[in-house]
Structure formats: structure tokens, C-alpha cells
Length: 103
Image (cartoon, rainbow, N blue to C red; front, side, top):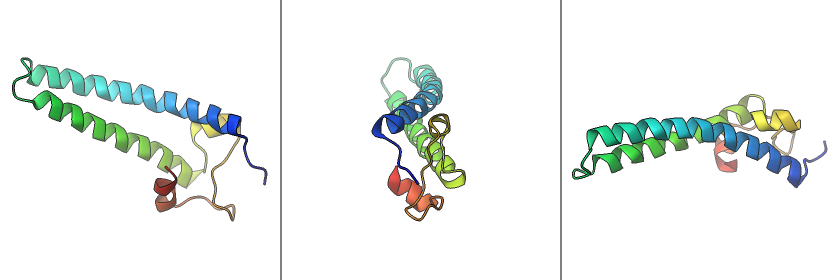
């Protein structure tokens, strides 16, 4: 089993970050819009709370994205494009615990 180079890993990660970033941008936009509608004058602080909820959701989506792919196929979309796989030292697929630790 050959190891991926730094450049291969970096390109795969950039691809994944673009995918997660697009989803995160949509989620952030929706929660930003909702926060602006709920707290239009900025006096109650609800916009900050709603924005924080959006950030937490984005974190869950990001961890879920990497965790799901690493625990099912060992490859995120970026890894598939670059033909690399994330596995344990024995060649087996990561567990959720291992994926979260790796993340």
C-alpha cells in the first residue's frame, strides 16, 4: 500500500472544503436571513444566537461529511477524485471514533 503525497492529500482536501463550504454557505445564508428577520434592530441578541446555531449545524455537517465517507468507503469525494483512501494501519476502514479523532 503506497501512501498519498502531501500534494495529493491537499488537492483532495481542497475539493472537500469547496463542497462543504458551498453547503455551509447556504446554511449560513439561511440562518443569517432568519436572524435578520427575527432581530431586525439588533437589540435582543437573537441574531447572534441564531447565527451560533447555524455555526453549530455547519460543524455537525462538516464532521458528518468526513465521518460518513471515512467510515463507509474510506474516501471522501476529494479522495475519490485523487484516488486515495483513508484507512487504519491494518488497511481496514475507520470507525466513527477513529474518524472523529482524525478530524
